[in-house]
Length: 440
Image 1: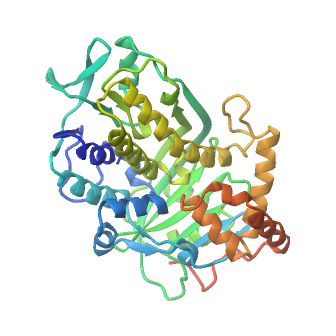
Image 2 (image 1 turned 135 degrees about the vertical axis):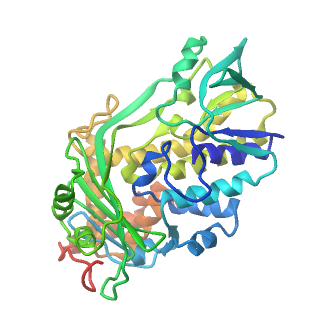
Image 3 (image 1 turned 90 degrees about the horizontal axis):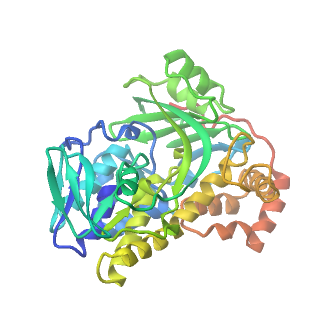
């Protein structure tokens, strides 16, 4: 998603944009080796979906026609957080919900149809070429050299270009990390319509947030069930262990989906040690003609579902930067890094702020669950979660903030604080099962 989102912005300002991909690109929306995380639950946040629809009008309808499920997160989502279910309410946005693979397939097709854009499959970058202070090209397997006015590295968290830069005499960006040692496991199961079920998406978390389970609809009348655990408390990848982990959650809803549905895939597991932000916006020695993008800059704890939206927002930042400067020198690259840092900082604060409430989480100096500011925020957020069990205003506003459709500052506006304090006093732990009967 990072690479093709970058290509969209570049295509508006360059005659030719070439996307290099190591994989064979399937004609249909199938999983592939280079995107192993696609086999797990993904979501596009509300702002990301609105932005995509602005780029490509009709994208949402095309996804729905291919089997995606329209989910109003307030009305259709069952969320058990803070010890009880969140109150159901009409939220201000809907999101077509499907596999990461289907979404990427549709976005790639639209970007590939833009004038001047081509995608080269089965092509692996093995190095960069340099002339003076400029990166001038990409070396690919087979000793070929592709020269370009601008090279964008969207190869992700494990970017090899970050290692190539110091070999060429350039600075390595410092990295901030918040260590969470998240492990997750997923399985796809058959989704059968059930009149007793009153949700389209279910999410159940422990309090404190050590374990999480999600059952999300996919195209093809399927659920994807993803289980998550922090700091080594990972869901097993064997049948019984996977189910027992789901059953350990404080609401049985996700486990019921597993118990009542036919398995369609093996259980697949993935690990992620930390959220990582390469502080490219602070670099002093920046090469001309080269920039990092997407997860190559910042990879976030996937629990929060922010990665694809981050790529979309960085694409908007890249397009804005290209429209405001001429040339692709270090000044342009630095301008993009600084512009992209604004949405990244918002996502980073939201993700790491939650993770730092766990005492085992390690972060930069001064950022720990034991410092006063973090403890104060944690106490307030517990009030927010409690208030969201009984107040439609708090529930809907919190959803809008989570989906980036409202500023996080809205959490501490006078009206919101008053409602949170008043409603949290009325909150009571409720029966965990979703109203309306069993999950299916």
